[in-house]
Image (cartoon, rainbow, N blue to C red; front, side):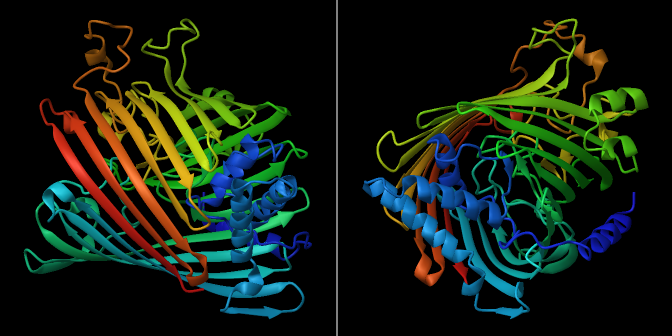
Length: 550
């Protein structure tokens, strides 16, 4: 299917839209701390319903924050004063009239350009030459027409210095590679190239490389829903760390998203994504994802969501383009080798607590419906809680995550493992949960807000990962030789274990549009890379400085 046809369709649609909104449809980055305020607003009951489809746009966030302000306006206490101040600072930051590089014409049309610089340093203190330094410049031009159309782009230019034998990052926090090969100068070898990816780096060398990434967004608001086309990563689900269906950790991808409110208590969302795979044996293969999700707040204490996803070859498939169709039925009817998955979320709210259970299944054998370690039952689960006000200003998150052996991988008996292109990945990253299949994780996170600009916190996780990964598919002649067949041990093979304890300090200076972030991590990895006896301690430090010019 040609994306050009879709682009023309979107353009023609924009010229006949009637203005219905007075706020920006620009997405708020998933890393913004305002999501923590919104999560607390839902857990405390200040918001009756909070969509679990993110990122939110500025209009949504503004509306939610104003509801929270109204609910806590009469409450006393320093913690409520702190929330009110944070909300007012955020609302001021998205006020179009406060952007210096801005022009207006007519009553509701405007254009603006935003500039931001990040300087980031990652180091291994137990091997100080191991470091990764980045200087990133972001340029974001945007246009808002008739108060119901938003068009924006994000151009990111980065200079990078690399020198390490072991990655100087926390597990799961390695910077994402750029979309395309880039310029690099190898200081050690005194040569340069224009076809370099960071994963091509040779350990122990000193390299400098320059890359650029781009993001985009076009959003059109109707009085019954929103249509968005862009290039970003989406997050669908209740976790603020990583979700099973669509996760923020994925490399950005081109997508089209339809978003429909279901009264004031629910939403229906559908997306079509255009993917590429640059992982092992992938040969830059194109593929597509269709996903939909319906969620509804049935009671003050209970929200339910049900969802499906399907990864399929790069082709026009009308049955997957219908937002209301059932992918499980269509895949069987088509007789294709598509990778379909489905699941549900159960979200509970009690006092100042949000609890959630997510379940995502790849394949399920109804002959063994309750055997969670049966070879044909591939699934992932998250059980978590978000708790606020244990003591004033303190928030607490705990999650337990499990992914079975072949979740997200795609078994295709017609091809070998290296040609397994319909796996749940994009540009070498996971579309779903950041864990590999056959993994277990316990995660604990805390955050304490000292004042308007200063916060601190910690996190601890323990992970286990056995054999298999998202790029593997089962070889049944080998699997049947396992002594536990047709069942699996929940974690088997040479097991890599990882313990991580991190503390952080974050300081924002809104008046100077600056932010400092410092964190220290102590990590132990046993059987690193699933290699028996490869054990390692790491002391990691990360420093980030952000300056928003406009």
